[in-house]
Image (cartoon, rainbow, N blue to C red; front, side, top):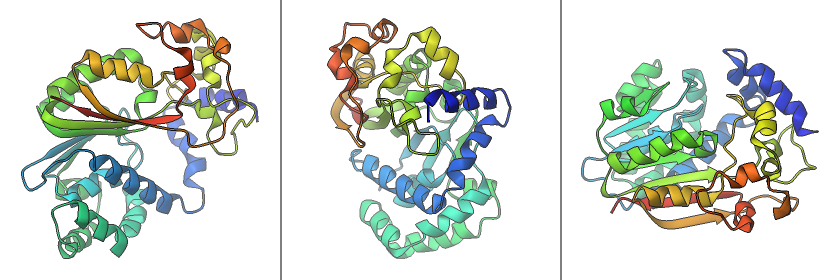
Amino acid sequence: MDWRIKASIQKILSSSRIGDKLNHIPAILQKNYHENVVKYQFHECIRKFDYTQLDLNQKCTALEIGTGYSVISPVILYLLGFDKIVTVDIDQDIKFESFQKQIDYLNSKEYIQEISNKGVFSPETIKKKLDEILKCANLDELLSFCNIKYIAPYTPKDISAEESTFDYIYSQVVFEHIPPEFLEILFENFKIWLKKGCYTVHTINFVDHFTNPGFFQDQNISAYNFLKFSDTYWGFWAGNSIAYTNRLSHIYYQDLFESNNLYVTNFIGENYKPSKHLEITEIHNDVIRKYKSHPDLIELTKYQRGTFVVKNN
């Protein structure tokens, strides 16, 4: 299906206060949605935490940029041993009813054992904590029990007012939805928020989201199709609160970390799905101009997804 059909629907939905929630309904209706959310959140949360080298036997705080529709990741951090977790987003999309369906999947011997292996609590202690979580009657009780502060909508000032420094900052496929001017503000604050010697870990998706699986997937375009268009043309179709992506590659984020004196200790680039080739001659000048230095255009289509492991030396 042509990507402009989905873009048109999202453009219409974005004009409504509940448009984003309506846009999310097809995903929720998929079979095993809640089970898959837990699998995904668990894998990514543990994978990124592994890079931090944190000693959770001392007091540690974490900041998640982009809560999304699930609070499973902050709960996992609590079960690992973090004393406080701040999670922020531009909209308040968490539903306690969804969490109740998801927590049952987390409450398994396999997950409990792996959390214990990575964290500070025994499997028995984690099980007891999960049993208490299951007793929570609403979202406020859950957040209070796990010492999670949920701020949505948020500004950097809101984060600073809640906690001045963090031992760990992370995000999962969020940065691609943030405009460059706000990314610059965030990265400047990372240098302030992140304690010396600690890590910030971020997984970013670099592909055109109209190629993502689903009923409206356009299988006839490259994963980098959005690099072909001017800012004006792309903004007309996808410059709204639901469809927006900044169309930036790993090079942009690498430069942004370095310009804020944050050291990239590791970058894990991935290509996770088949894609049609996009010639570098098709990349629009408006995209190229987003980079402060003239980039190697081949690099702009080199990775579909990547994880940055970054240290504040």
